[in-house]
Length: 498
Image (cartoon, rainbow, N blue to C red; front, side, top):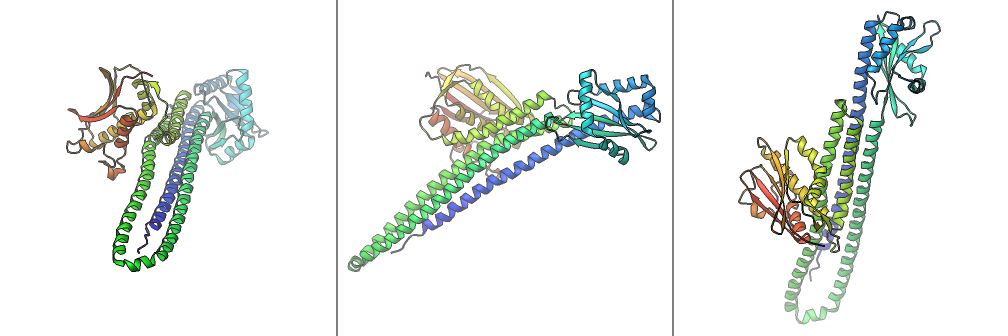
C-alpha cells in the first residue's frame, strides 16, 4: 500500500507562513523606526532654521544702529539700549520667550548681558537661570570660532535649547544674540511617537505568539503523522495474510481509500491555511488606513513646523489624532479576535456617531488628496447594532471610493455620504463620481477573493467581509449599484428596539 506524505509538506508550509509573518511584523517596526527618526530630524532642523533666521534679523538690525564697539555703545547709550531691548521683545513668543544680547568686557574678558527681552522681575530671574545654563565657555567658543552654536539643555526640567549667534563687525565678534526656546512641542511629539512605538512592540509580541503557536502546531501535526505511519505499518503487517487471499480486490480498495484520504487531508489543510491567511489579510487591510492616516498627520506636523504655524493647540490636536489612530490599530486586533464569537453586545448608536468616528481616521487623508467630502445626514434615528463592525465596513467603502477616484482622476472628485429613512429601513449611502463599477463585474464584487486591485495589493476580502458583517452579524443588507456619476453602496439596517 502507498503511504501518504502530504503532512510533511504541510509542516514546511506552516513553518514558512510563521517565519513570513514574523518577518513582516519586524519590517513594519523597522519602517516605523525610520519614520520616527525622520520626524525627529525634520523637527530639529525646522527649529534651528527658524531661530537662525530670527537671530540673523536681530543681528543685522543691531549692527545697523550700533557703533563699532558694541559693549561701550550699550553701556554709555541708554537710548540705544532701550531701542535694542524693544527690538528683542518684538520677537518674543510663548516658545521663544527669552532673547538677550551678551558681550565681552575687553578689560577683564568677562561676559555680561547688555540687553534682554524680559518685561518683569520674574522673567529676569528666569533669564538669569538660562544665562547660567548656557555657560561662559560656550560664549567663549562663539567668540573664538565666530560661528553660531546650538545647545540642547541636558536638564530635564528645562525642556529647551539655546541658539548663540555672533554679531560680527569688521571681522570681530562684538557680541552674541542668545535665543532661549522651549522644546515642549518636540517633547510632546516624541512622547506620542514613543506611545505608538510601544503599540508596535505589542503587535510584534502578538505576531511572535502566533509564530510560536504555528511552530508548535506543526510539530504536533508532524508527530501525529509519524504515529499514524507507524500504526499503518503495524496494520499492514497484521493484514498481510488477508492481502495474499484477495490481493487484487484489496489493492483496488486500498487505492480508492488512499485517494479519498489524501483528498480529505488536502481539504483540511486548505481550510486551515485559508482561515489563517484570511485573518492575516483582514488585519492588514484594516491597518492600512490608520497607518496611512498616521503618515498624513505626521506630514501635517512637519508642514506646520516648517511654516512656523505649529502652535500648542495644533500640536495637541495632531498628536491626539496619532494616539487615536494607534488605539484603532490595537482595537482592530481585538475586534477580529472577537469576530466569530456569538455573544457580542449590541450598543445603541446612530449613523452620525459612526460617521464621525470613521472620519476621525480618514478625513485628513481625503482632504490632502483634494477629494471633497460631502455629507447629507438626514437620518437621526438611533438603533442597536455592533458599532465597531459597522465602522469597519464604512471605512472600507470610503477607502475604496478614495482609491477609485485617485485611479480615474475625475476633474472635481468627491465622496458623498448620505443617510435617510425609508419606512422601517435606515439607510447609509456612500457614493462617488469615479465612473462606477463595470456592469460585467458588478455582480461579482462581493465574492471572496475577487478584486480589481490584485496588482496593487488587493486581497478581494474587503467587500466580501463587509457584506458578511452587515448581513450575517448586523442582520442588514449591503448592496451596490451605479448612478449617473459613479458607484453607490448602501448599508441598510432595520429599525429595532432593545
